[in-house]
Length: 328
Ligand code: GLV
Image 1: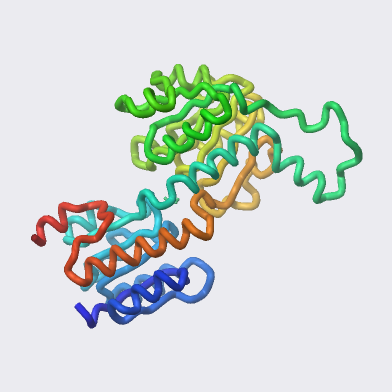
Image 2: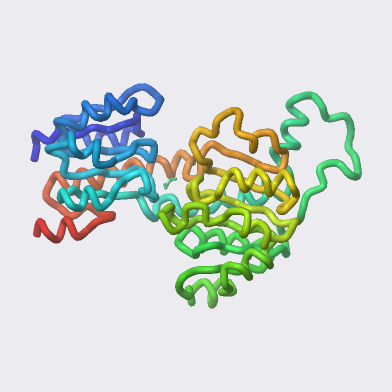
């Protein structure tokens, strides 16, 4: 398919672009901003392959325009921005970027744990705004992370790396998952518990499950009520997994001590969102995988998926492999 037309919705590291350049006719949305929907809807009309970000909605409306499209490579491990059944019905392959961002994202989860426990955002603002007057025995007292209890909701690849880091901090690690993870139990000493027990006993609750209709608002007022008033919630998965209004009220009313979010609902968080008025909420702009090396690996893996597919080979990380099996 040497005349294949490929569209990329954001500037990417050179390694990824040069790989794609060798596979067909490449066009890239150049501005460093999300591609406007109408432009994307126009661009998909003539293309065979699309490399997109989590910021693009790949849905029925878009697919109705995309008559030639055969592969969508999402540059993320999560793909809740994509209507997978709609692609599968049309025989379009979806790929994601698992594995290459695991440790970098686990590092960020740990940054969030430490950041909210030790009030890093708040403390940094005081210095930057010239409000720091003197060292004080009572200034910015936080909570210890070492020897505390970490509760992990789920226990996927990234969580395993979080648990590994937690072990280095002498933390007790609980997890609540649909199935048992023997490796986590045997190698890392993770203890399986049910969801309410995890909420009741943890000092830090982290959530990294995929966003689905089952996990939307998985954490809301009833769950916050079960948590300790000294506990923290960490979300580096997807914003809608946490009921953000309920989180605001829980933080305002002291149901829980604090939260650290790498993701919000919506993104970016509106400037008038009440969460931004709270000092006990640390908020980052969705940077879980944002290291130079990891973003390069993600872009390259997304490009490799397209390159393999266009040259008639199996893409390395398909989400709906049944489409490929149909082709065989
Ligand atoms: C980022 O959020 C990802 O899913 O990779």
